[in-house]
Image (cartoon, rainbow, N blue to C red; front, side, top):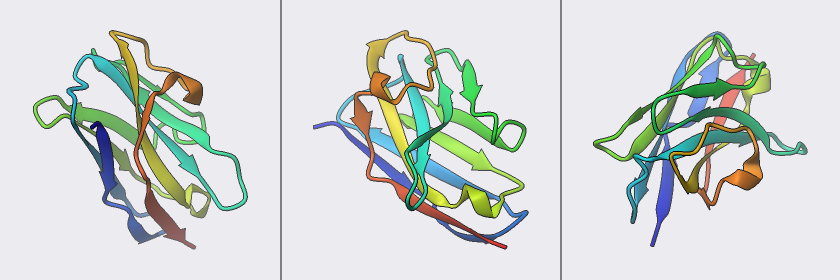
Amino acid sequence: QVQLVESGGGLVQAGGSLRVSCVASGRTFSSNTMGWFRQAPGKEREFVSSINWNGGSLYADSVKGRFTVFRDYGKNAVYLQMNSLKPEDTAVYFCAARDTYFSDATSEALEYHYWGQGTQVTVSS
């Protein structure tokens, strides 16, 4: 059974930093694109970042220059380092993985087959 488990969320002041992690089990995703999405209360889920099998990355304009996505192939994990956090970054952050091998990074949620349960990130002003 494939599982994606996020951790590292919490409460941080505006301008602070936080790193969220996602560890996969049940299958190796070293050859698959993994991504981060978020959903704020009352809003649609939105794309944050994606990283492909070769380390190529994609970011939403709203987080470009502040967030960095990276992965640890040995741990079957993907991370999102979030700096200069803003109150509008407050959301539940979800990890996702594509099923297709050697696919591109993408912002399309429908391209991701596996999803985690999410971790709450709250940024206070």
